[in-house]
Amino acid sequence: MSPLTGVPSTGVPPVTVGAVFSRLLTPKWVLLHLVVAALFVATFFLGYWQLSKAEAGGGAVNWSYALQWPLYGFMGLGFYVKMCLDEVRRDPDEDEPGSDLVLYQRPRIDTTGDPELAAYNAHLAELNERALRQRAEHGR
View 1 (cartoon, rainbow, N blue to C red):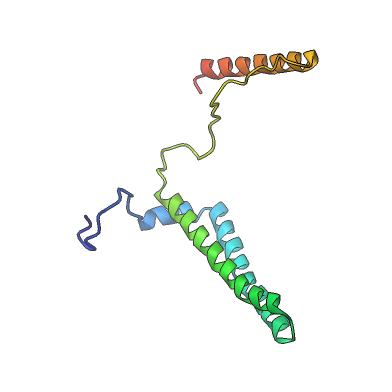
View 2 (view 1 turned 90 degrees about the vertical axis):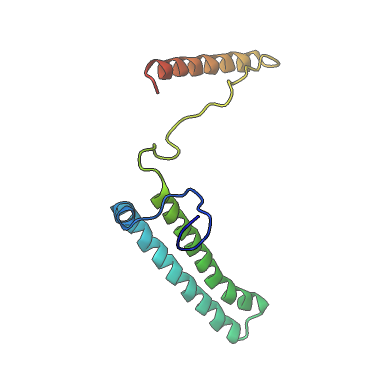
């Protein structure tokens, strides 16, 4: 339970200023910040453009897009803020997400039908087994 708010804590580590500066101000993240800001502003220009077309005699589609473009901007901004918070709360000692190859099942060899296809599938299975053995030998 948080002493300040009285709300039960969720086990998520608190966001510190140091974590924000060290993770969200790298060149990659600064470029992302600039792109998101430009796209956010662009949605309002697109909304204004649709509004001017609607006021000039456009139909219901122009009116709906005039409302939708700013909504898209706020939705994108919300998703980006969530992505930034996930990055700040991520454990810095764990590997980068998506860097491991995960095999959930061994490929099955199709031996029915075409003999050339069966031979090719057997060759692919052998290559896969070789790659798995090399990966196991190198401890990855």
